[in-house]
Length: 137
Image (tube, rainbow, N blue to C red):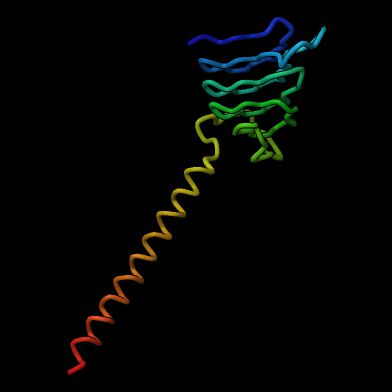
């Protein structure tokens, strides 16, 4: 799986592009039609950045994301279409690209907890019903 870099793309210093990344155009534009990446940008596996947009400095793009709008400096963008999920106030120069937020995983964890709570309530009600039927003559 290769990396595709459009002919008018510009890539800043210290960028990291994982496999399957595409820096592409969106159609029939003339002139500058591919993205510009700032410095210290990390683009996750399979992400697509499309159009003549600027991705700011110190940006992290999540794997599989499709980014079609400009992204401000020091942001994390994920999803289809890409949306900013976090903006950092300061950068200590360390890119922690292994610690991107996982909103889907968080939602699944919350659903698991809700199911566990409901199962606890159901067991309580079943035990209560059993006690009531034993007490009735």
